[in-house]
Amino acid sequence: MTTEILPKLKALYEEDFPLWIDEILKQLKSRNFEEVDWENLIEEVESLGREQKNKVEGYLYQLFRHLLLYQYWESEKEWCTSGWEDEIDIFRKQLNILVRSKTLYNYMLSIYEATYQDARRSVIRKTDQKIFPELCPYTVEKVLNSEWLP
Image (cartoon, rainbow, N blue to C red):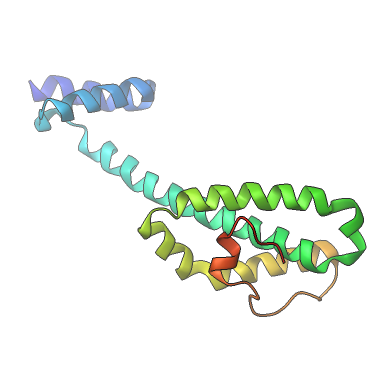
């Protein structure tokens, strides 16, 4: 039986991904492990893990950028404050959802300073000003606190 179903599942992975997921779930739920497309399933699980980490990094990066602009770019404050506040709220909310996972929270801690440095370089290029602190001025608690703004 395996010799017939497995090649079809592998082809289905390329041709109709949502149907492939349904079929894999069916095989797993029925504990029919011999007919699971393990190679592609492992690839997808690994991809999900990377995707979650990329989201944490992306939201943290955008949050740092907007916090820095909000706090330090005085010449644009009059026109941009409301938009920056909205963006800060959105990125903070998305980040808080992800870091409910202890693993993703710890991942965020491991990339915190490097992500700040990336965001700092970005806002320096954007503003053509070097007014932004070299070291991250924001604690994790403040960054994640929905009531806090610098």
